[in-house]
Image 1: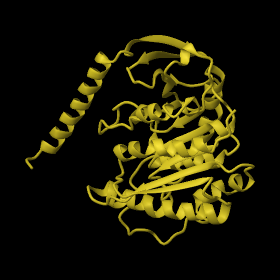
Image 2: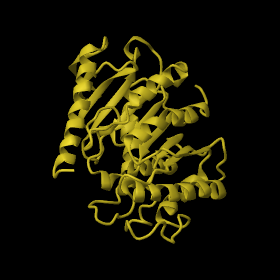
Image 3: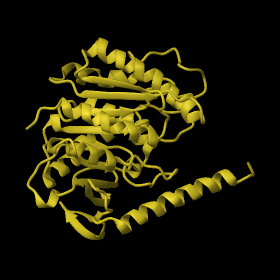
Image 4: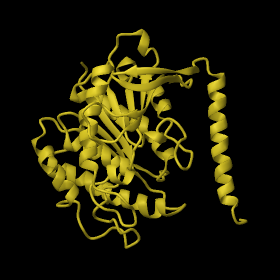
Length: 334
């Protein structure tokens, strides 16, 4: 390959994705121009990119009153017909909100979460969700509880989980038609975002009823010196992560449901040969620990090994509908 052609191809691919997205907006019967809104004192804009399942309220500098957290960009996905009904909805709080619905990430990929939500909605009205996608300010800091070698920022996960389950959830439940009870509140994420989704549900089982944690970075704080051998001899049992969550899980009146998965592809680069390999080893270990130490069973824990799964948005997008179906099937209907 000639020098520079790989980068050029990646840019061309990103441009193609963006052009396809703009064409979709131009031809969709639902696509509407954006207009400004104010919700609960937060300035934003409502926009309809033409997704069959719903439209958005987006807040570019979301900072609920009383919080010390920095302002975040937040996309609130509202099911199609939300404004014309009085229905209430479960809510999923999604990490890495910049790649949830739109190709805003470095690789111009996204989860296409709206497609999974559309398919879920086809199962019936009880499967329709509001999704709150939070864009990180400092991903390495907000989504980790321990340092990772070679990366700046860490150890803000406790504060981030408190932010999501406190000011953010309070704002959403106050200003949108939600079912605010624990059994209708979920978290979602992958990689570091999966670690954060898992942590949030396990740390606050009285506020969050379940988590979808894909290819999760349970290795943070244990295997943080990447390339030193897989896996390291240390155990999750007794780790900083488990110590932080032990009391809340043991005292939980109802265990938060957990969906954990990982992919088995090891080719294509270190994101698969190292990161996804670590996610697999530690994911299996976490699943065993949850069963042995905290009483998880088939009703509260689902694990999936994806033979074709890589450490990327395409793989997570393919699995997310089934993950939500597991959580929703176990919840108590209001």
